[in-house]
Amino acid sequence: MTRLKKIALAVSLLIGATVASESFASVVMTGTRVIYPASAREKAIQLTNHDTHPYLVQLWLDKGNKHSTAQTADAPFVASPQIFRINANSGQVVRLIYSGDNLPTDRESAFYLNFVQMPAMKASEQEANKLLLIISSRLKVFYRPNDLAGNPDALSDSLTLTLQGLDIVVSNDSGYFATVRDAAIVSPGKVRTLTKDVMIAPKSKARWAITRDIRPVSGDIVRLTLVNDFGADVSTDMPLH
Image 1 (tube, one colour):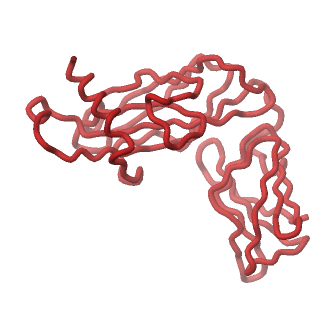
Image 2 (image 1 turned 180 degrees about the horizontal axis):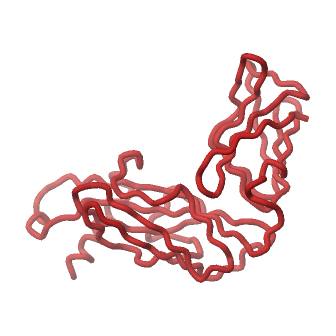
Image 3 (image 1 turned 180 degrees about the vertical axis):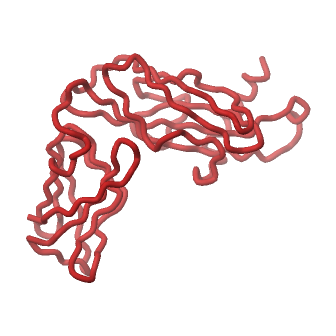
């Protein structure tokens, strides 16, 4: 077995056993999400190692199971290369290739890109007893059909918020996923948070439970902060019906 395969096996065995917060990651991807146009033959993503130490990196994609591993990857995408060494203060381009499942053509489909990093070991260190810190990162991948109706830059125009009993029902009539960073009721001198970090699927509805301290009424203003294709926040004030 080659040295690279031995290290790859170590990654496979240790994933899930020692995982740290991605806020400590040395290897990061350019951008916070991937938009994969249906017309593209492949999508290139850039990974960069900001550390002074080399790392071994492994990637895979899943359909939504946050406990997935490279062995249980089930998304219709292939990452190339799937495992590689990235040197100190260096970069690596990875190609994502769609493998051809029959996905809906009138709406986006969402998947998740996972990558783990582990400090690269010298040959002399492989037999030593060491604690290896493996760091996991997870990002959204949106498969976007060709000629999808609507404008992702004006996604709030396709959303409506309706007060129904003790819930606020959010309707997304577009073919795009709406990623909500923050939603809050805004009144003079007061901002009351409704929810944070949620995603509303295309052509669907979501229910946000109302806490006792909020008590909104029809006509209130909801400040909705959405995340655009570039990972930037876009805030819009919308009426509550």
